[in-house]
Length: 413
Image (tube, rainbow, N blue to C red):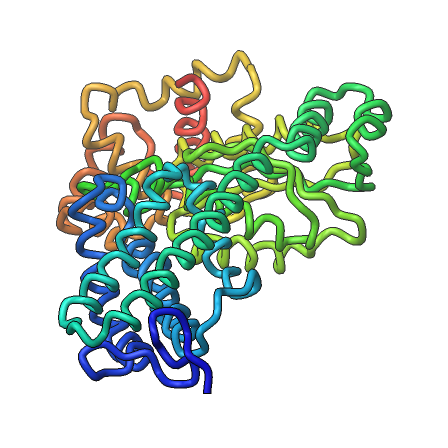
């Protein structure tokens, strides 16, 4: 039977105040995790600003994982192995992507281990000196390993974000959208051109966390975009080329094989909305590399049209907005069409009700719900619209003129 430094037998459990340190850590892990999370939120504003799903989810899981890992190391009396810090490295990379400062990330680990050690040594007795010395050495070594693994992963992620690959993808996308010669770009970046691209313009709504009181909107926005990027990458299994901010942007999704069927693509966009947690309006068109500039221009126009007309979230293509698209082209008829509704300019409530009524498919109850008024109010307003303009939206003969007039007004701004 050997004796470790400080007179501690290395074949017996390390104990403080008569209790097994490893067993105590396992039993106390959940309570310690809650205390650490509370302390972090109190100590550093960045943790107070993070979305609750991050603080109570990912960060709490990592704190708990550290407690369990250290209990294992104490039980087996050994240092940690590199493979045992994978979760900490992954978490650190995510914090780097979200823009959480490295000192705040490291602070969390030091607070967690420090609070555990403080609780652990609180009841130490004079006879525990050997075990205390052994555990203190292990605590310092564990913190050293955590600091090295977490810091290196964080810095690696930051470098990747500005890496040659990302720069190359941005260059390729810029060349595709601008219609520039692509052979030199592809050769320089090492990226191969796809035979087709799914050109997509997106309008992205705010996530609840972006406007939550006390939550960092910047961090929440970055998390939203990270989830969106992951979902766009899933569409064809190829990394999507994107220029997107928190409000929307453009994506070019490589199609090495056959592009997704429209119905399948609609389901993918619905899934993306659910995963991202916000409303998404998207317009898509399949294009060859040479056709990308025109496809991007067309999908951007479609998004502008559906946004102005108050269309619901979802995926759109040209056939969904044929009338609005055609009427958005410059034409001498624009002022005349828009002028059909000129009598309503001084009555904005009538114009708003007319737009909602047409958008609802002439459903008076749906219109009333959308405007939060009584259905009888909708009926009254539609009668006034007919009296002032001479156009009755419920009349099949007048409805095309009403729709064209509304589209012309939107086109003219």
